[in-house]
Image 1: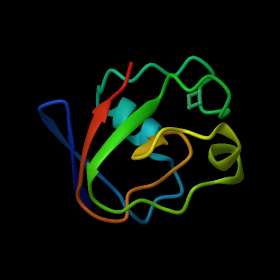
Image 2: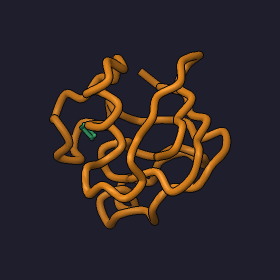
Image 3: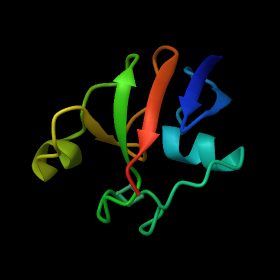
Length: 88
Ligand code: FES
């Protein structure tokens, strides 16, 4: 398990799970907007990554041309402790 610091709160997520970061955080009550429920279309689950390591960008994320330091939480999984901020 790794610790994910999100907008002032800490959550524990399983870095070995196949489940994406957005779903693991939402299961614990994190208020992430996820309008397309993980389909990689809406971008409402975007996060700013202040520190930590995530899985590589998916083809979907690469096509979206997100600003530097931003990821889609439905398209990645934690690989270390993280400090992130929700964009929406
Ligand atoms: S939930 Fe829609 S892009 Fe992530």
